[in-house]
Length: 591
Image (cartoon, rainbow, N blue to C red; front, side, top):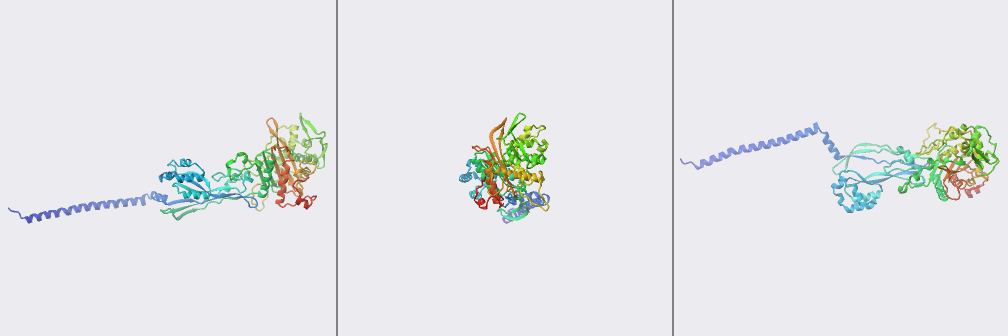
């Protein structure tokens, strides 16, 4: 049978039509299922992220967009009693590196920029590169406390991974004049010496902060949270910078002129105990610490104790007056000018014979004070020394302050009590000696010494303690005037126009097995005697020239410091024997 060709074509076409729809349907189902699975996975993932565990993604987003910025805070000011700034904080920058970023962005390949960085910092370029050679580290300081100009230059170098941050540096406008008193801070702006250390908590503020959100380009888009810091406290001292500068100049000149190892001075207000000046030489420049040594940083007025020698003799006279075995106008027989106590010799330079109490102080008689000291009970004599504050701190609370050196013993020989009366066997600081003379000048009322001004609330009264009768204190104070008059041991301490009282002290320094050939020279004085206002103590340690008596070294320095302080404070002259013309044109040293 012959097949029709048309019929075969129709059957093939039909077959093809039957196959094609089933293939398209299968592919469609596959695609539909894949899309459904993808959307299902997205839906499940979205549900998981937003409902079950949203915190992780939020944290990652915040990590990329949130930043905490610390608000800058600066250390508090230190100023003198008149508002003159003695310590201030200035803004500076710190240069630091993120070694990981340096390596990621191939920052070390920019050789010329690293050389420029090393040059401006004064460092070796290899040393700087060694600091960032570990890519695992994320922070390392390259230089602290650089100037704003230097920081701007470093910023323009644009070295990948090198950044700047704000910090502050302490600056001391008066340099070495107040160095030991104010002290210094370290590179982290924490106090490590002097008042900076003592009041570190008060002078240090708490930095504020704010949390911000940034966009992809690092721009701030909103502030989410802001936290205020605690402002640093300021400190006002009792120091008068004018007197401080004057005293330091005179002390430094005296140290150089007399070839001394060191020199110190303190000026204090008689009625309040406020310290107007406290100086030491040699000093140091707190703004450049390249040559700073512990010896120069020591505040010798408070830390160094010494045997005061004859500067202690007024206390022997006061002990006898307070006990009542002598009267103000009594005399003491010092003949023949020497005596032997237990095999040891006590003597004067010559036989003064009969001496009044004033003459004992004027001529600095060892025999006179020894007889007075031996005439009162031992415990009464020692209590007088304690009551004057010679074995305790002065009240300043300064770091490193010494209480002095005094070896209490159960049994005292007569020789030991005699030497105690003229300043041996006891060591005191310059500040303790100033407090003792201020107590005498204040009519027997003892005040603690103060270095910081504190606000006086209503009803507030300064701590005071009467340790001497006013009559005896005033009598001894007036006796001290004879020391600076003709025939006294310190005529070079006189000040034209003012009545001045004081006492010299020339003591040999103790060494192993006895006393050496080095001296300590002291002059402690009060002025004006008609209405006492100031006490000044000057110490010249180990003068190296031909002059080694306090009347030749410490007394002239005292005259210059006390005379200048009286005029700076506008305290009127009280010496009616000196005409106004003589006062205006006369020198510091009278007879």
